[in-house]
Image (cartoon, rainbow over all chains, first blue to last red; front, side):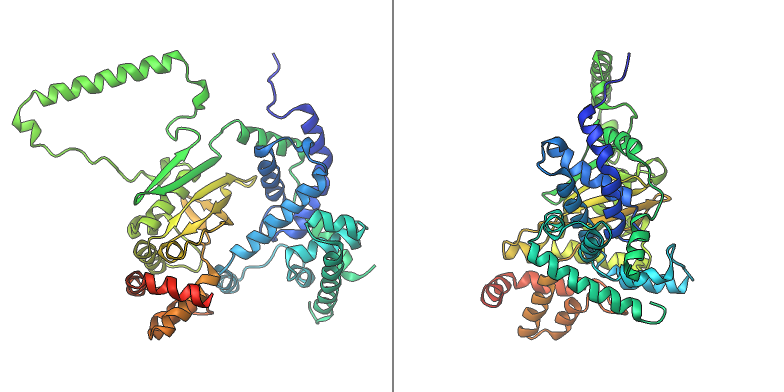
Length: 160
Length: 270
């Protein structure tokens, strides 16, 4: 006898189709020491506790917004530990598991990274990108401009 | 293509994806009530904890059938019989001190979630020794944990903990609304941060104690206005480069003695 799944087939198919896009935004917006899959799982869990994903008008937008919000919360919650961890890493000769020249991008807040990724890499129109991040189109455009300037400035710094 | 676009593309592909199928399996396991969710609430001075599965069994509670009920009933009868036997044995037995009702469990037998629960319970109830056993945070030595425990006990810190297990073993995402006497006095209700908690080798290796950063600046201003610059500095210096830590219990007590003044100050100055 086949084991009955708690997630309906329609939901499974939807999650499978959304997974690559969700993981990408999680990888872009999340801290480098957080597995993107963890963020995706958390976002899906939060939604599934409330109801089926297929009930959402725009599941991709909803889940991407949730992922970026989770990433922003995690970044904020680093709080007072950030300096201590930074010092410890230097003292222990810790080396990051990402290219050194990516640091300029990582300095941007998760939301800035996300908007830049959506409009520059995925060519998502501003109106849609704004919906995916829970902001107005005007705010998305302004944020993307700020993010672009900051990213360029950071990458122009020697070694940055 | 701009250079940052290449880097963003690289970033979007980082790590090793587990794949949709495995992710769905993990989500199903969590939804089915595996011990992945824990809710802990502190009530009336005690941290009350509730897990979705008994920590002493690997069987989900939903699978307990009539046999389990019978076994439980027999066990209750046996305990009642033993009690009656001892009660009838006279004063000698009655004078024997009862066994301790709570024993700190060995971390080797605890699940990661139980370790988080126990650590939070210890820290927010002022059990500094137990907290030191369970927290091993980079950058925070034992003395720091002891001071945090003392401060939280003094200020009436209460943490509501709701954790979800993540894909990476030992990694949890926890929603942690936090209240204390400072927030209670002004009817401030914390929406709660979501923090990452890591358990490794039976100890908590990452846990960012939530703070109300905006309120800390205001309580510092209040203390300064009240003529206590030393305590003001303790609250204002929670996030410095070097050397600071939790406020002292003395400064917490000073606030507790002046909660009405704090509430009035907050109404006027916030």
